[in-house]
Image (spheres, rainbow over the protein chains, first blue to last red):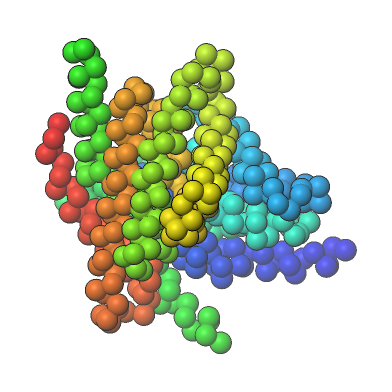
Length: 207
Length: 199
């Protein structure tokens, strides 16, 4: 039993983090999170929330998969996701109101994030709960990794800081590149990250 | 009367801002998924954009009423995510049925786009922004319409540019989404130029 579950686990990990990474493989779900990547801390909180919601809702969807009628499954999945998002929102509001205010509506927008829905539909609907949980978890992690890279670049170039701490060179000698923390910077940095990742990848894909 | 006039003026200002300076796609990145995937052709982009304008205006209005007349009196504000999603899904379903019954032609043109809209983050995003910014009913109508129009404008421009682009040689790694994002970034830069036009 144990050996049987080890190998898929590695595959789930590799697919989620690199091979099928939701962002540069499928360009999914950038909507609700790209907007907060101008600050590393906000991105970190947002990504944690997203990873938790994805993992838990995949687990729940998978748990209920045998009792969910096929034709209303989208609605059921949406409700499950919304349920976890509400929990995250309420907890954040209670223990970290400042963060909740600066994230604004983006926590709620996790509901329509295509990654959560996509993983529930593509994987969790036909797999046992535990592997669905890890699939959601690693997809969320792969997604978070890319967004954190973007956030570090944007905050570093735009404000010369990392999580609010001044960086050695950037805070003193670097002229603040304000465009980077403004919306266009988000588009440019994401495009460059996709460019780099796709340039490394094609050889693997073709074989 | 004066209060109403001021409110209508505010709605116009908010509507203008939502189209240009606070474009929902170019400044808040909402609705990116259909933006990158459905922007290959001007005609389909216009179809989807039109459907977004229509649905966004009405769902903002419906959600405003549901939030302020049902959830706030009951003290169930945290329940808004679920309620908004259900209202949006139900609205799209009803529109689909009405179109199918009374205007089969329009239904054929718009039909494939309507289900896509239910999961468009921009629609839910507009409703959530409208709650957070505490707009009044009239301002909400202006906001919903303006946001939809802004989205339509952005996707139309993008589709037009991409059609011209189809002949150009783009580096392999940038093809598809990469170049779309760079164009979107340039468009966002251009839209920043509208800041302060009307305030």
